[in-house]
Image (cartoon, rainbow, N blue to C red; front, side, top):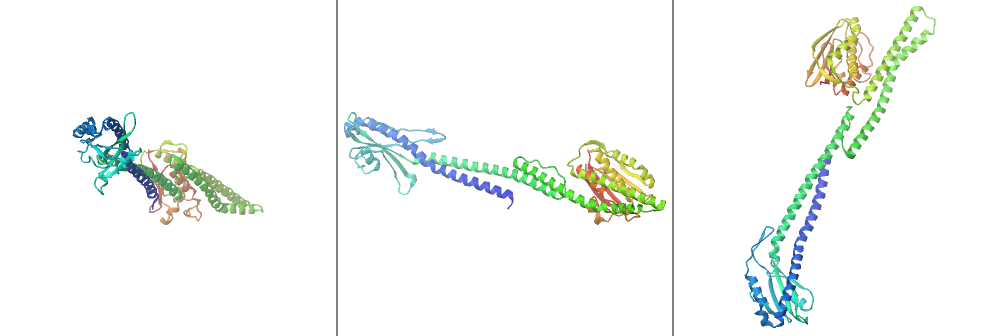
Length: 478
């Protein structure tokens, strides 16, 4: 399973379980909370009625049944009501009130008087109130139907002045009358909970996507660095940014160590030939030699020294380029003019080899580049082409704008390079033999050109040509 799916699954599982338990707690608390509030109101109501019934109950059962409280309860039962309670209509009055004497016998009942004369002393509300305790009960009107539950709350009626127990007043209210409010509250809680879960899931998707995106950026950066590309460190916030910086620092250290090791090995190999020649010439010069031989060996020492100097110089240039992250001094330059200046510096060599230079197309193309590095790349490309160009041959130059790139094509008419060797062109110390000689170059010229192209966001590539080889230097045009 991919990282993003794992993170989202974990987040969704945590959010889902949390929402489930929170919703369950809320939903299980709604019903008892509503009942508790209703019971609290009923306690106040029944105690108020107990005080109202005290004088009439003290005067006797007939006084109670024909008194003011009986008439008020009868009028209460006949009242019509249409109340808007937070969006729900209440159109009935649901309190039932009955009064019993000190023995538990019903004396007055607002429910059409059907229970008058019955013995309620066994009912919990009446029995507890008669004992001076808090009397309450919940009973079903229909067996097996929880929605038919009725809540009863009772309060003792005491004689004014003596506080003698005269009887009990009970108030009953069906729970079904508040069920609509309970159902609405549960629906609202459920909708709110599901909305919260969806919102949390959306946040989880966003956070997971952000995290996975940045992790993938780091992964792509590591893969591209592993492939040898030079890229800027991705800008990632927080700890991931610190990780990116640490990865870049580690890459720089490893590349530096590997670069030194490879450079030392390659340089040692390249130095063997000129050093051996210098040693041989030096040993011969220690002996008595004819003037002509002495001059020949002395010239060989000078030539090999110059070769060593050029090798060291190019190695220093290449090492400096390989350690750079980007061009240091970028200016707006005309590519065609930089090429023309490089040709002018090599004019003597071109004339000596009787090389003809022709431009197939020479557009005026500007680009943002380091002038020294661009001049170095152009000079190395032209020098490499002259190394392989036969005397009296032609160098074909072509500069065009293609898909936002300034593409310079340079073709010599030398022996060319096998296509299988093209991937190695531009690597340090890889080269092919010069025409008419078994001597190979160091390959540092094309390596420098490739590094300059990479620093500017371009590339160095090759195309077949008969005869010769066509080299393409493509750089972003301004």
